Image 1 (cartoon, rainbow, N blue to C red):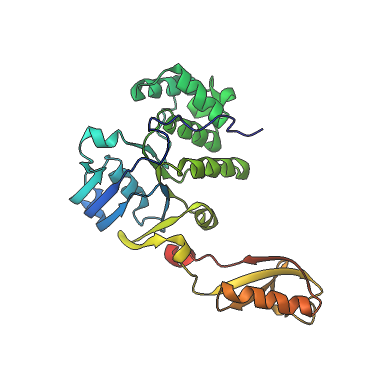
Image 2 (cartoon, one colour):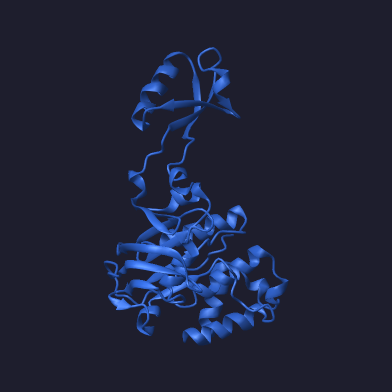
Length: 300
């Protein structure tokens, strides 16, 4: 049974076309205790979609999220949500932030914690029941947060984020410490959410990022190295893997990695020609897949 038996949070926006929302950063430098982590960051996002934030550890991804959430005040530049400066409470109430660090006190039971945050968000007990069902955490309600596994803590933290719907979601590594099945369900939920919301989503899983992202923001050494459509990225090498029978003597065994024969091509447009040639030679092709991820060049 799916961990998400219910619908997405009910929208307060009118039905029809998604409402227009906007995040704008202009020349933002930010950091901790006077030390800059981000420097000169400028971008605008306004299309409902998933914007994947990539970068190696220490690049500034979490600093970016904390600055967008209004937790860190920029040293220079401006952050605006729907044209309103992030320093004003009105702008911060338009977004929800999931930190990569669990922010729920260990001494609270799960049910107590969710009811407390529901009060803070201005919603009632029915919303607690809804997110508990949405995340499949009914059995965790009487347990202390300190008793939970890392995966269970992540599910409770995500439940807290969905207590109150916002226009914008900042999700810092939402699937870390989750088993593959639950991670898949979280990704499906976020994909549905992104149809009508702005979602900034950081991840260390490059294949996950490629699967769900429409746009990519790549941060390196505190600066924005790339911002654009994921579909426009191309890896430095285009390598496909072919799982096939009857390829002995046709495809080199030296190119084999596991069950796949690796073939480097100039681009995806060459795949149909190669497949046709192999079939004509009697090769029974079982699967063809890309083996290189274009995001790797941005991440490293």
